[in-house]
Structures are given as structure tokens and as C-alpha cells.
Amino acid sequence: MADQWQEAYDFAVQVARAAGAVIRKAGEEEIKVQTKSCTVDLVTKTDERVEKIIIGSLKEQFGEGTHCFIGEESVSKGQPCILTDKPTWIIDPVDGTTNFVHGFPFVAVSIAFAVNKEMEFGVVYSCMEDKMYKARKGQGAFCDDEPIQVSDVKDIHKSIIICEHGTDRSPETVQKIFSTQKKILCIPVHGLRGSGTAATNMCLVACGAVEAFFEIGIHCWDIAAGAVIVKEAGGLLLDVDGGPFDVMSRRMVSGNNMVIVNRIIKEIEIFDTVRDDAPIVNK
Ligand code: IPD
Image 1 (tube, rainbow, N blue to C red):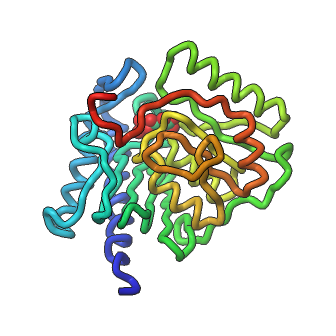
Image 2 (tube, rainbow, N blue to C red):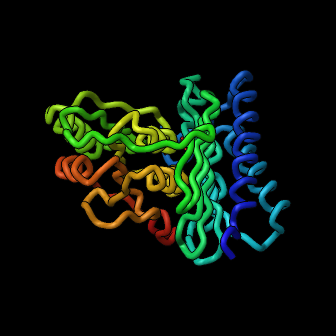
């Protein structure tokens, strides 16, 4: 069936927009903050509420039991994080929770849909800016319905690179992150940036505002939707060691072309993370 998932794609866009409206409204009220894996891994009632709204709407639309769900907040409460061949939604209800808590104006709803472990489409709604990014496999990438394309810069010296710091504050990890950033900055590149939401960072690669974004420690829900958007905008994704991209590996480089991506990979100091789909005892 040629267009089997079009209805799901259109519905995901609607759901992301509605979820974004809930987040904007919640940002005007008092935000109660709790922590998850460590003191800088934040969660709010809004993350939980928005995830429930999204999963509830999808179940109502497509029927209970027909699709699987991997949602950031459900996983943090012990739900499995395993990608099978079944139609699976991968959801980050509030990507950029720290930004949300502080009123830093970049927060995204990220919704991806995979079948046979391959992403069919991705939707990222940058809700404070009211920008809707979306892409469906083989059909191009869009921002507010306008086609988007990665940058054509091949000279690393003329690039902007996005890097984030994640939530691991162990001195060894922080040392590697800063050492990598220092080496990239001193190539030199035009600049380093970071929006505080991985999903939005990937959309910035997709629309050509920056040349690359890399991170170790992100989760599948942060990057699954952005991965389709980057690919469909003509970009590429690799593991930080240059191997194939694996959405569950918690490591990723996304960029506009091989020249830029390979140059960045040369400088990345890799540190260990536990895969998203590792058995719970290892986490
Ligand atoms: C975080 C953001 C941030 C990235 C972290 C993620 P969350 O997601 O995407 O940019 O650096 O690694 O965990 O927790 O706000 O959904």
C-alpha cells in the first residue's frame, strides 16, 4: 500500500501542535520540578501530562494494542525501551525540559514513527517559536510546509557546529566533552552553539542554519524524529566513531555532508553510555 502511513503522519502533526499549546500554557504557570536519574535530569508534571495526552490520542485514533509506544516518561517509570518490527511511536513530550523550567525559549515536542525498525516519519514542533518541522521517508523535509535543505558548506572553517553537554556531570565525562569542544572550536570553526533541545538542534541542521550536531548521552526519543528530518533534508547521520547510526546507541553525529561530519568525528572523544535498549539491570 503506497501511502499506508499518511493518516498517521497527518495525525502526528495535529497531536504535536496540540501538545505544544499545552506546554506553552503550562509555561505561564508555576512549574514544579522533580529530578530523575540525577540532580540535573529534570522532569515536570507537564512532561508527564503531555506524554499521556499524546499517547492517549494516538491510542484513541489507531486502536489500543495495534501500535507500540516508547515515551520518555513511560520509560523512566519502567516501561520497556525496545524497538521491535511492530509499528512504534517514539515520543519526547517536552524535549528541552531544562529550558522549559528556566523559560529559555526552545522547547520541542518530538514524535517519530517506526515500522520494521525503520523511521517512517518524524515530527518536531518547536512550540515556543511555533515552528512545525516534519518529514516522511522519501518525501522531503519541511518547516511550516516549506521545503528545507541542509547547508552546502563543505569547508569546516566556515561552519557552525552544535554540541550539548547532556546530564552526566562526572569530571571525566565533562573533561572529554570540553576537550572535544575545544578541539572543534580551534579547527577553527565559525562558532559552537546549542539550543538545549536535541530535536530542535537536528532541525537546525536540516534547515541549514548549522552544519552539524553531535552528542553522546542523548536518548532515542530526543533524536528519532529529527533523524528522519535531517535525512530527508539531504543530511546524514553516523555513529560518533564513524559507524552506522543506531537510534538506541545514545550516540550520534548529524550533519550536512560527509566532509563536515568526518572532520567532526576526528575530534570527538568518546565516553561510555548504557544503550537505551539495555536490560534494566544494567542501567
Ligand atoms: C535533553 C535535551 C538536551 C540534550 C539532553 C537531552 P530532555 O532532552 O535534548 O538538548 O543535551 O541529552 O536529554 O531531557 O529535555 O527531553
